Image 1 (cartoon, rainbow, N blue to C red):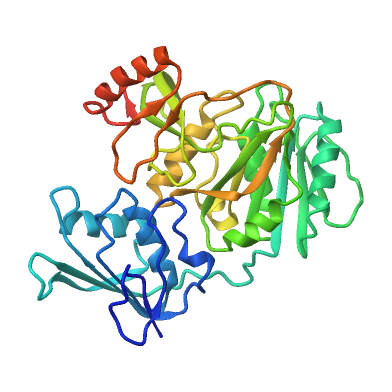
Image 2: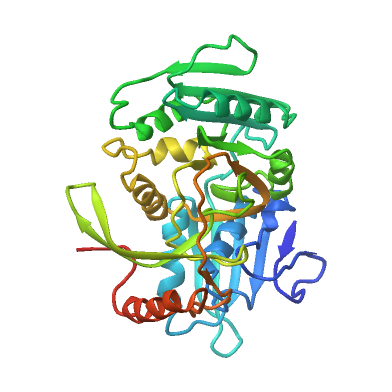
Amino acid sequence: MTLDLSEILAIKQARHWFAEVNQLYHPTGELEQDKWDVVYSSGLLNTTKFDPILLKEWFYLVGLGGQLIIDYQPSSSFSFRELEENMWWLWKGKYEILYHGPTQQPGEQRFICQKIQSTAVLEDSIDKWSFGIITNGKRKDLLERIIQAIKSQNIPHYEIIVCGTYYDRKEKHFRYVPFNQRDDRGWITRKKNIIAQHAQYENLCIVHDRMMPDKNWYRGMKKWGNCFEVLSVIQRQEITGDTGNHWEYFPLIVYKKISRYLVKPLLHFSARLDPRDWFENIILYGQVIICKRRILLACPQNETMYWQSPEDHVFSQDLLNSGYIPRLNNLSVLVNLDTKKWRNDTQLIYSFSSRLKFVGPALKLACREIITRIASIIRPFKVV
């Protein structure tokens, strides 16, 4: 079976699928992964900043032994080398390059690779979820609301794992893992790793004891589909109704290295992103982790870090370095039950290119203009 993902059908009798290329581009949400003998695309790669998303989505669709074929126009910013580096970054060990060279079209290059390792996981299903809640025992009222909200999702197969200071409810689908080591420091990284180690299912949703799925959370996850690696979802504060820091971009972060792993942000700012928008160095804040179990086991939380350390910064960078790129499922919502008011009032205007333009209070915009100029000189995530 052949799948043509080009804007205009190029291969006769192939299945055709096309959508606007942006962060929400998600053919694996509608088409079966690891199924297609040939997945073909022409004219899409190297036209937007979303190339890593395209390469992720396309390769997931290819069946074992099948081929991914991409026709593209190289440029100074995305050349023969950049394509091969991106594939190695995202898919190393799972493909073999069969051809990479010119086509009969002037200036056009063709990349052909064969999938040599399946990306499907046995027993993985959108109907199977392990929910983890970390707690120090001080928010039992909120924890009760979270547990009841999970139960009300009507997920066919699920479990709830509470790690920290709580009690064994002796209920079906519930497990309690006592853990109070270094509670004075808030050893949240260890608790999250423990949950991943105990989880039964491949789909993980690990939250702090203030984050509650809304009534349609699972419905939104089913619409997104089971083909994902690391996800953020909409986060809405209960007390104000404001959406929170679930999808933000840091155009510039300058860190000071404190130790081998610990870094301190010296200069940073963030801006809210449109759900269509995406950048590599998005930080997934630690109050929520939605990912595959195998990914958290392969790329665990750094246990030398504690609460109020930049453990989420480090984890996000570790994921990125391992080839796992963050995505936003804007169909699901988590509710923040905390009474603290929070909202980022600066937003980056959506663009399919890497151009940065902000909207927000005048003083902040002036600061961001200065920082944007600095960002053109200093790379993001630079450690000083």
